[in-house]
Length: 115
Image 1 (cartoon, rainbow, N blue to C red):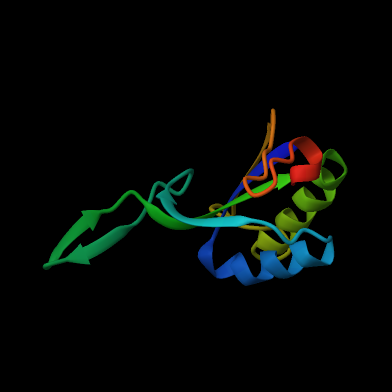
Image 2: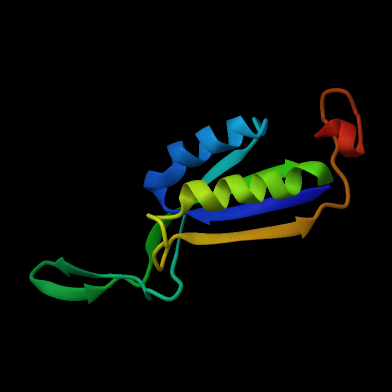
């Protein structure tokens, strides 16, 4: 089992959800977040002053999958969240983390069956 964490641009969310449903991934958690990478945030005019905000709005997806779904999920996110053919700085990141256990609260099922 793996936990896939993907940081994407907010306007790409619907594209990513559509791509995930095509590879039979229907369970995910979505969180609003802020951060910056190579683009180092943004400048904004506030009260007539140019202020460096340093943070950009992003969406974090958390998707727990069984091992056979890892590559299709990663590929779906990567292809649907990329801006244009070659992508752009700020398109996001995907992290794949080992998931030690999963427990369904309602039934107590554990492991891959709980996902």
